[in-house]
Length: 98
Image (cartoon, rainbow, N blue to C red; front, side, top):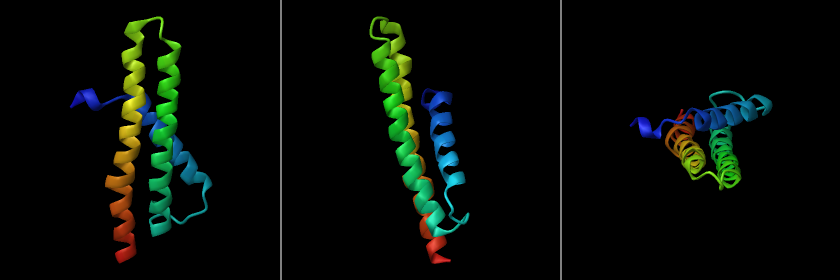
């Protein structure tokens, strides 16, 4: 399970999602909040993929550095999609049902 833990990827997704939610004007724990959280987390996963891709392409001359950059690329996408669809979407449905 520790293979799936990557601190830079977590920081990218949590930081970008949290920062975007801070600047949005939605009320916490409403369906609109969780909808925005889902959208922002998936978007931050895509941004993290691009960051990882840039890191990976920047280290093409050093094959040993490609692996960690690819891990950032893939795990950031995984974290964004996981949070968006397995945490924020059920919370949005739960807030709608209240």
